Image (cartoon, rainbow, N blue to C red; front, side, top):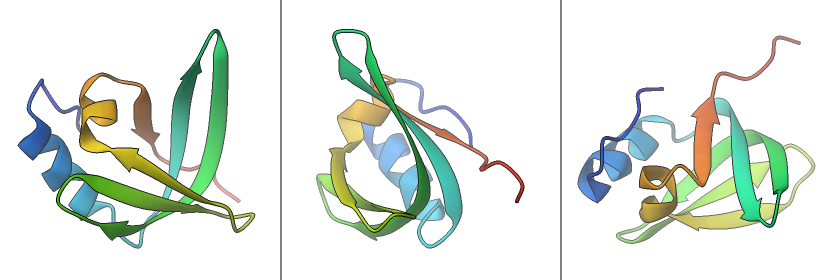
Length: 79
């Protein structure tokens, strides 16, 4: 997935392209805590998007998290 270069609208467009596709998210939770999630973007809204992990948990992120690189999208591992 391409990087959003400082624009929330560009980040929203990139996230919309990933709806329903299997992706890997690397989430910076702060204080040296990171979370590695594999799943799919479930829904997009004007300010936030939801992500359903393969284990069934639902997470919500804002597009500013993508711009600030607190949430990064990657291709999922094969398998």
